[in-house]
Image (cartoon, rainbow, N blue to C red; front, top):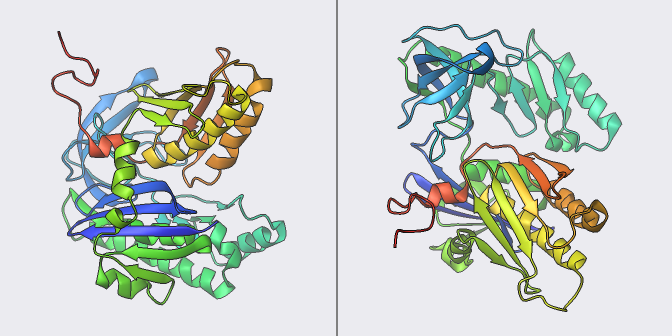
Length: 384
């Protein structure tokens, strides 16, 4: 597998495309003024609200265009008990979408190249993708030996190839980042940004470094940063050169044509994402099993490309019994394991549909690039 990163920066706006074996797999948009996932804020409490089952939460002002939300109850943290006007340090865990503001957490995480520092946890987790158990155990021991008091750590997959010195130095750096955030809270008034997440190119570089072949970009300053780390190609209009703008337009369409003549239809609703597979023009060219396998590869690609999240319901073509859909489900599992955002495949429902839940962290491609039609209000139909 080879990875190419195509990066385009214009002022405060950036676009990043990830090509896997020259096929577009992911796209990300970044704006320095946006409340991105991972940003840390000193937020101001605006209002306490009652939720179901006697629970409650808060609306907060983080300086964004829409009020953010936080649950009062969070795992491993004492319940938040605050009053209007009080300030609290929070991190964005879900970016705002068309109809909802950002979702926040007090369980801060500081992401490094090999580690994630969790100052309010008390345990050490290690990536399940580190297949060498002895190496995983030695990394856990190394981190535990260098912990200072109450703190938590997540050991990332890349740590398997890091030296002891790199691990220890990174622990010190991430702790220092947390200390810097705490110092800032004493100097500024809420709402205010305390720490901005890494640029999308930086994150993608770290995440794909093992298979990274080249970075194509249009900014000479960024070129200087990466030219000694990986092959870099300068291009005035990289998205146009690599056909990504055309791919983006295709990714906003409901229907995706398969090479066999079959088709996949994708409907994004407020409750879930509904995906339908049918044979289309694929008449007599092969079995439905082959068609569903082809569709499974494309569905996994579209989930990542469009950043579909939450509940995803798939109605494959033909019979809805597991023995006929087993191979297609296995392809989905195999392909979604390549995705850095976690998905859970629940198998077949009683109604014969494949159900997936993908963690919601950022808006979908459609949320970013389009807005609801004021005439039809999103139905796609207008009055006669």
